[in-house]
Structures are given as structure tokens and as C-alpha cells.
Image 1: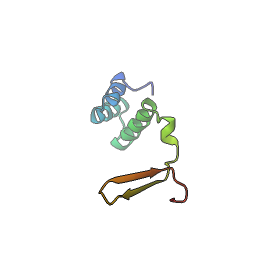
Image 2 (image 1 turned 90 degrees about the vertical axis):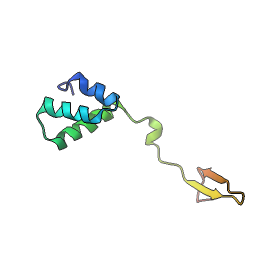
Image 3 (image 1 turned 90 degrees about the horizontal axis):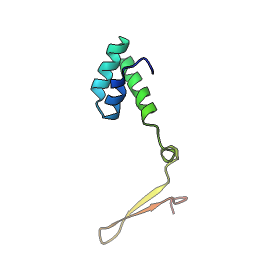
Image 4 (image 1 turned 180 degrees about the vertical axis):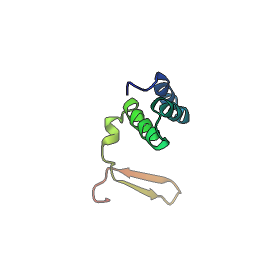
Length: 80
């Protein structure tokens, strides 16, 4: 997205979503919906998902013990 001002990337990195969308609309002269779509596209480029986030979640079983504590079993097969 070379046609967007540098301030858009800075605003996205610093969590200023509204300012980033406003800057995209001004630079592109586009409607809000398109600016939001461009924001999400650029956000994804600047914040790629780590490989671990792409893995399927492991099964998890939660169980309360008699003493009130919570036990978490992760990665179990067939719920056992």
C-alpha cells in the first residue's frame, strides 16, 4: 500500500484506529467501509499472525476439584 501516507502505518502500530481510518479515507477519497477494509488489510500486513496462532487449538478439559481448585487438562484425546 505505497499510496497511503506514513502516518497510517504509525497510527496502526500505535493503536490509533480512528485516525488511521480517517487518513485512509482522506488519502483515497473512499467510503468508510472501503477505508475500514483497507485498514484491516494493512493491519494484517503490519501484524502477521505467528505460526503458533495458525495451529488448531488443542482440546481442553476443565474440572473443579472438591477443594474448589480448577484443574485444566490440555491436549487430551477423546476427552480422557
